[in-house]
Image 1 (cartoon, rainbow, N blue to C red):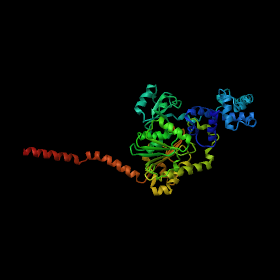
Image 2 (cartoon, helix red, strand yellow; image 1 turned 90 degrees about the horizontal axis):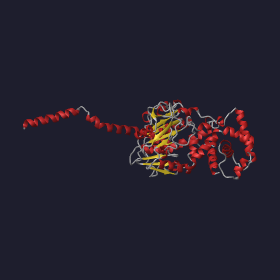
Image 3 (cartoon, rainbow, N blue to C red; image 1 turned 135 degrees about the vertical axis):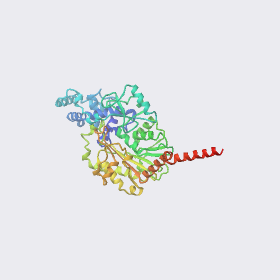
Image 4 (tube, rainbow, N blue to C red; image 1 turned 180 degrees about the horizontal axis):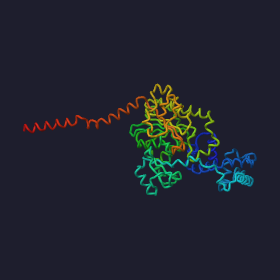
Length: 474
């Protein structure tokens, strides 16, 4: 019965809007996650008709042992749509079985009412936008190279081409160098490459934050992922850093922290120290963490940009646009995270990202962050477009910012239209960060420029002349 209680816990969190389906499922222990995810998703697909059946059969009124609607939903789902309730003959199972005839009758009536010829026709259909989003996998560079990955997939029968045109077509992404795009129907959860950590299942937009933060691959590098679980972005940061330096990954939730550690181990991340603490409680003057120069912030958000195959199941009940109170609370928390990150004395770059499409969590938060005391005294501003995925076409909303020019420094992804989920990314830099980068680039160019300078031929001629004189004297 514990399996059903795990599924009920997930459904309760979704009802309380504590995250996306994917995010909440990530907190389930890995050994139970696959089975729990299947039950949760299938229950949500049939939730409308199952709720109608439970209500018509008066199950909750007559059986007090069934303590919640979500418990009734998962049990009735398995009774009517699966292989039966997978539990021992305890009092809760018996409470449902006593009503099996009535429940079956009401289910048949619901099918007739909808004109459904099969059970599948009763299920909520997929979000049509998901069909335009490829199945993305990130090649884990801590294990192998993109060259080897391309050879491996081609040896498996995949051919380079448009990933949406054929189940056997795939391509290397145009913006993220270690990302591959496959047909949406492709499945890799049981693939040995996934199980060994060589590939990571990660949406393209989710790869933007680590790519834009661009932490250095140096032994003395110190980087922070402030809200790390389940660990995809953390492992991406690790790969970019080539497992060098130190990457601190914070996660306050105990279950999600366990998931994070499992993910990092699977991804062969040896430079990461996972910290089971709330980033907001960490002092920026701490000698251990205060040396961080790069911080990634991907805090809790509404998840309104997620359409990839699952969260459309919540759309009927979670109208984010109407939930202004919740969005305001999320925005206040998000701003608090940015302000705290700006207090770290050595930080030069801060990425703030969300999987939300709402300006209140995106442009509005950035606008407020730029006006805070921390931004003013710390000398923070938005990075220029050339540092923030310059070739990406969709930028921020100018009308939502005090200075419309800042919109060009922001990255947006529109769900369905950009072959990704909905996403938002911004990069804050200290005022002198660009100047330091430009000086470093100029310095790197100097030797080449000196080699090709006009004086070079003259120097050669001078040496040649000396040689001639010497020969004459001899």
